[in-house]
Length: 112
Image (cartoon, rainbow, N blue to C red):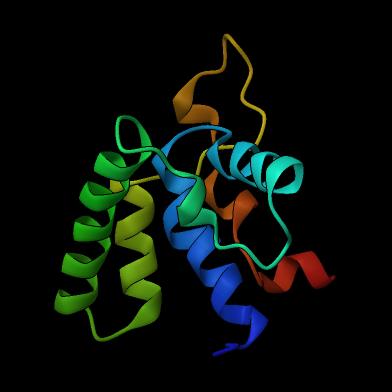
């Protein structure tokens, strides 16, 4: 079943961009080297590294979804608990300098 592309953007924003710095970029590179574009990204996670972190993060996201009825409030608390990592973090970057709003998907300020 093919879902709208927006679900892919939501999954990347809520899950992969928040697990580890550069994870989404590495998964896409690995998929392009060894797979085809229609392959799902979770297939490139490994049992030893990616799957345990993804399960913990998914539990966090689902828990927050259950307590919030408003998407903006949910996203605000998720940004506090699990901020979005930049695609290419610097070696000496300070985590507090990463502005979660700068990495949002579908932000009105990007269109301007």
